[in-house]
Length: 191
Image (tube, rainbow, N blue to C red):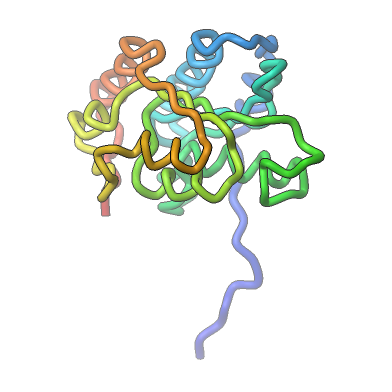
C-alpha cells in the first residue's frame, strides 16, 4: 500500500551557522561574492554537497539574510541548489513567500555561479530585486554539470521582470571553486 510521507525536510550543514556568523555587512558586490564562493569551497571541503553557494542580502545595508549551499548529494533532493536553499531560508525567516513584500527590505541574491534553469524560475517568482553571479553557466558545464534549458538571454528575462542582473563578479575566484571540485572528483549529479 502506498504511503505519502507526512513532510519533507532537509538539514543544513552544521558548519553553515558558524561560517555565516563570520560575515560582516557590506554593500559591495565583490566582498559578498567572495563570501558565497567561500561557502561553496567549504561545502566541498566538508563533503556536504556540490560546489555552489548563494546568499540573500539586504541591498541597502549589505546584511546577510540567508546563506545557502548546494545540498543535492547530502540530502538526496535534486532541487536543493544553493540559490533555492538561500531563497527558502529567507522565506522561512520572514514567514513570507514574496521576498518583495512591503514590510521587507529590498533583497538581492548573490550566487557563486549564474542560475541554472530551475533556479532561474525560482528567482522569477521569489520577489528578489537583484541577482549577482560569479562563474558562468558554461563554467559549470565545463566540469560536467548540465544547466538545463535556459534562454541565452536569461539576464534580459529577469530584467523584464524588474530584476537587475550583474554577472562575472569575482569570475576567476568563482571559476576556481568549480575547478577545485573537479580536482576533488566531486560527484556530477545530473540525472
